[in-house]
Image 1 (cartoon, helix red, strand yellow):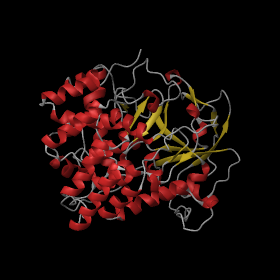
Image 2 (image 1 turned 90 degrees about the horizontal axis):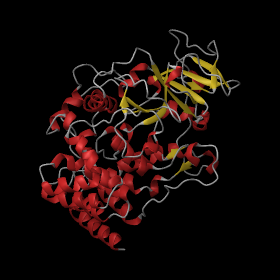
Image 3 (image 1 turned 45 degrees about the horizontal axis):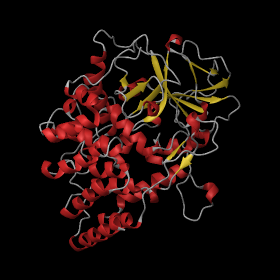
Image 4 (image 1 turned 90 degrees about the vertical axis):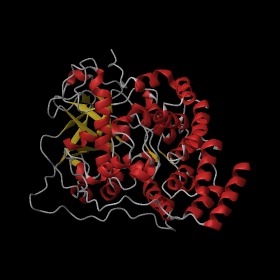
Length: 486
């Protein structure tokens, strides 16, 4: 009740004084070609981002939400992967070499019923859709993802687009440790173009299972050590926007119809058969065998079929026709259109989302997790994240500070905290200390990365050491990565 009362007071103050403005956009007319490879000289958007930073990106451990709202997520992803390579990969083992060309590929498994939605909306992550065939654990996943990229990240719509989409990392080396394709995630395989690897990381097992305390993930700029083998599977994490322009080819199960939606991707399509011990030639993944010939090949100069993908959610349709992912994507856009006062009102009337639980009775998935969807109308973290993109008047700042200190949920506190990066240090410091004191979790992890920007303060440094002394030593020594596992 106390939290509800605080929101009512803040809401009344916002109604009286007004607080509906978005943050000022970046200056300049930046024209970025979606999907274009990043050149040696950074783009206009990245230049604007860099101009707002007080230190080089390689020495930055927190990105303010207002700085990335107008930044192209593909280009930002490439820069973050370059940063990770510079501060991490190259220091694992100086003798390591660049990988051989075309030595691995990234393949994503998706259910066939989602192909039309992917055609229209692109490949999305759990943070964007609130739907998954894996672990429905957005807070835990965000905590791990911050550790894996070695940076505190906000949770705005633009940042959720930046967060990784998960796939298989397939090596063209059967000695890399074979694993079975995880068909519980889907039956349609999308193989991505080589350029996608520039903004991808990978791990030798499921990254969520590694936990948030694991070392940063590997990039594709350095060849893996000979003793780094796949366990459950080798997992790829693709950062930034991912859509049909990134697809190189598709594989579908034998007997499945080649639909207009599949043809509309404009890439070659093969079939595959599932089999226990077979595998594509010269790869380390097993459980399927591709057909020799394509079942569909786009004709040069002929435009792929134009397809109207599944309709967005329409009020009044029967539940059987509702696509939860599309519903949540549409609701995310709805939140962006709300005024600050309207968001504060929805927050005051809502309750903390408690859907982050395993689904009982699901026996076919990794770790016993099932298909789970949660309504964005109940997801307070998105409402709070939208507030972090708005112009900070005293009342909005007070609302975010209140959540960051008094919020009952670590994910909500982390999101609110990410919007306070521009507070004066004397106001920010007690909030960081409070969340570090509460221990490991999303808010503690966010506070840790934000605290790395203020190591000159002895009290904060002591709190960071108590939170994770080993990790702090790695950051201070500029040797973030641990050696490859033996």
